[in-house]
Image 1 (cartoon, rainbow, N blue to C red):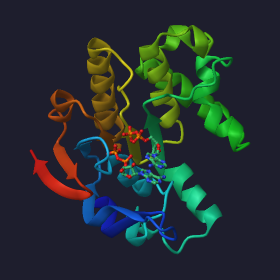
Image 2 (cartoon, rainbow, N blue to C red; image 1 turned 30 degrees about the vertical axis):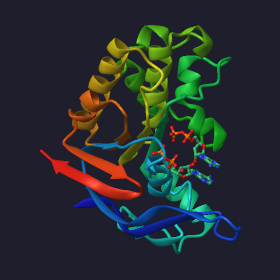
Image 3 (spheres, rainbow, N blue to C red; image 1 turned 120 degrees about the horizontal axis):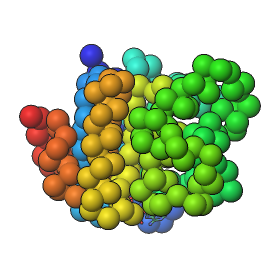
Length: 229
Ligand code: ADP
Ligand code: ADP
């Protein structure tokens, strides 16, 4: 089954200005449950716009976004944020950790922010995730005192704390050296296999992209290639 469906998505920025620009053109894509996908394409081709629409962080000008079988167009803002919190984890190039908080506090941050109780179960999950990303011995270190690769691992653990079905990642290793990049990708793959999380990852690293089950190339706001292995 599909976990995300995009149907005939168009995106125009500055719709009501003298200079509207269309960046996505009638784009349709389905993503299967538990799949590991990469999105490639030149800078400015529309990858981030696509990912933001997939994650309901931005709205399409027209077309449908269906997440876990739910049409998102008709949802109210609070329903949308619930769906997002329950179903989607985000990883960005810049990890946006809070530097003065510890690794485990950062992993728990989505709960702190939404004022949800941190139960023993949640705490156990945070510890398990830090273990999976190889940072259990550093869980009480301030984020500030971790290396770039370690910080991105904390961000990965944080993206998983709500047990999302889908992880959306925008250049998650854009800021890391090539050895660390390799390790972070192996980790994402491990998580994909362990939790059956669907991954959709933007990367400009072809070598990395080719390790995915499916490579989608966006060119000028359209699908140029869609290769499934
Ligand atoms: P990519 O991620 O592939 O680099 P983007 O989705 O960031 O591409 O951008 C696609 C095009 O849309 C670019 O021409 C960019 O300048 C434009 N764009 C992106 N975001 C906005 C915005 N908020 N307002 C206006 N134009 C935007
Ligand atoms: P990337 O290529 O990694 O997506 P960009 O520099 O194109 O990075 O975009 C960074 C952010 O700025 C994105 O969130 C994008 O939506 C926004 N953005 C890009 N181009 C424009 C633009 N012309 N006007 C407003 N926002 C933009």
